[in-house]
Image (cartoon, rainbow, N blue to C red; front, side):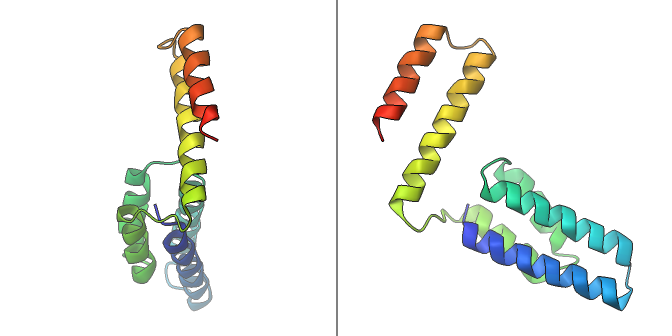
Length: 124
């Protein structure tokens, strides 16, 4: 996902929340909604939530912060890393996290886990 678009979507959702707070329109509901959306967009930038979660929150943002919702959807469908080193680091982190989960679930044996982990780390 494109972190730049996610960041801009967060800013626009925050501006929208501030507008609704000061304008008094549905203030509590819309402000809370936008703050939750900002939180999930931040989790997406850290790689902690799936594209489907971002897609869902972006669609919901279309009703309160239309441009933020559009940018969130664009972020979901774009590759988004500016430099190749960031992409490589991200993919290595993701791979390590995935094999950790597989090991914790008992899908990988200790030997398989160590072997795969070593191969991933050797990429660096």
